[in-house]
Length: 179
Image 1 (tube, helix red, strand yellow):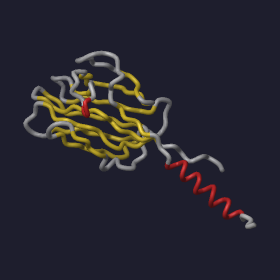
Image 2: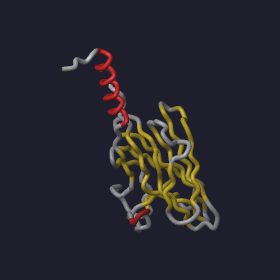
Image 3: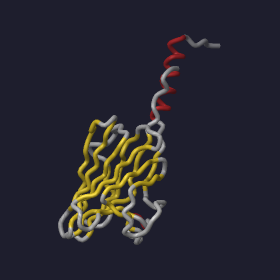
Image 4: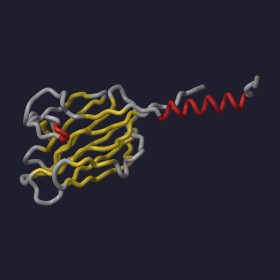
């Protein structure tokens, strides 16, 4: 019978903890459970363990969302941009993985900007281009970046703009403080 020395035990514990740290739970914000109706300019809500604060966007429940979902978020017709501020309910970190973006009414591309913050400090920004029907846009500069807040801004004016749906986030489980 082989006995384990202290280095083997510590290495095993470290590998186990690293495995726990990489374990993550994904969430998709579809905006389906938000109360209200088409044109409702809601200010805050919660979905899938995240708090949503909205400024200058409205919830379109006309069945035009990505992948057959009923709801999407888009800017008010006369504003230049609206934004969605997302944080984990009760705090905590996460990663942005992708979002579905769509161009509405424009004949040329429009943008959706995502800014990821950690402790109030900007970590990275992704500027995604919407150029037609819904497409899934993966994280670029925000890929793998740990954040505790993401602000999504969609371009909008009298001629149209962007809509977005299915904001995909991955919760980050921190390493245990002690073994």
